[in-house]
Image (tube, rainbow, N blue to C red; front, side):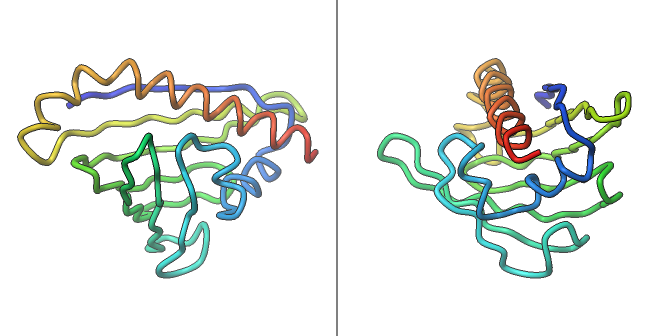
Length: 147
């Protein structure tokens, strides 16, 4: 099962990072290919909430379903993401560093759900990690601009 981690140091407290992280209207500003994030059930940051992430890459559109399973507010979020031929566990950790900084870590562990993605996903690991690192840098810039 392909796994990777990406992290970034943000010059803001965990609650400021959490505010941007949970704002579905801001998500397309820091997530590559995301057109919109639709909350289907529950409230942002609430365990059991379900969202549909609508992506467009090139000419291809697809929707990923994100089910938020575990929450420690302003500290840790664990989701199951599925669709587009994948199923993954995504853990996001916000760790205070010093007085006004946060290290944000994203840990992704997933697998393909059809014959094509089962074969191809292990080879896309580097690309997925690079994209996640770029998304985290965009999130950092957004949080720091708002703080």
